[in-house]
Image (cartoon, rainbow, N blue to C red):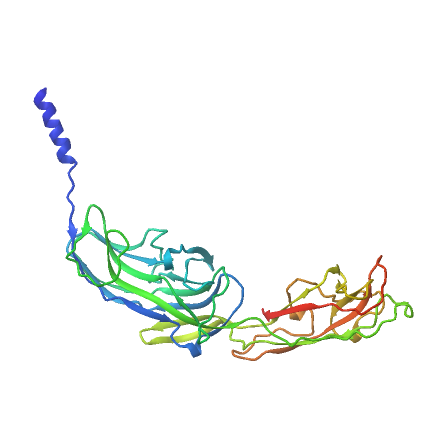
Length: 397
């Protein structure tokens, strides 16, 4: 019995032994830096406040071919991204594709990588911090192999105020880094004899074979249009002499001037020597208009706001879309009263016809609006100067 117990313990001891290997890897390539976009003159685009809109999509960036070799196995070819300052990516889906969008160093701008290898769905490249690496393939033993990578890179408008331009009028940013690496499995380790100098290797038990750092500069055009401040004189109104509950309509039309219509969502294909082809996914088409009153809204259904309170009382200002000559007299309700604090397409409020603008076209549009004084129910009338102010916000649809 005594010998039997000793024999059993010996078997348990030996069965628990593990043999760790120091795996030596070689080849790889020196770290590289890539600047996006490549050509400022061809990379002009409209960017507004719409969150998660694509600014640029590079269908395939040539990250280059790299030869990988290890003297033992098992080992895997893996891909991951290193976030800027440790910021976690934002998960987002669009058009059936999942993205991990990494915030860049510039507020409001993000970047994503998606694998476009033939035969695979365009999977998002995982984050070093948040998700385990994308294991492309695994080799059981000593192997030398060539690895080719052409990720799809997308630059996004993400939550947050848009950062400031630099002295050259460009939105400069530093993006996440893109890494191709060899990963081994514990208890195996990467041998210190592996060739150094291929880039940082923050992933445990890994050896970096291809490290690409991304920087860029965006030449963006705002989506917001401008127009000169306009003063509309409604005339003198004699409350006692005129029985109508409102004065005559006066023309309050205005002209908006918009930045060049460069469209949005540039799609490009990039090779070793820069951008090969480029197209704009969405041309600018149509305008949005919003009227924001600086005084209280008295009757939203009739488009009436209060006077500024500095003089006359008992009346407001009524606004309506269209020509002043076609508006109803007296208490009649306009066919298109101005709806305040609401964004509307210009074609629904004016004779404007929506169309796709030519790239770079300078867009100028006259919007017809009419205004008049309007008697407020159950409010005492006091004589004096009467004025009110509205702010008009116009941008590309």
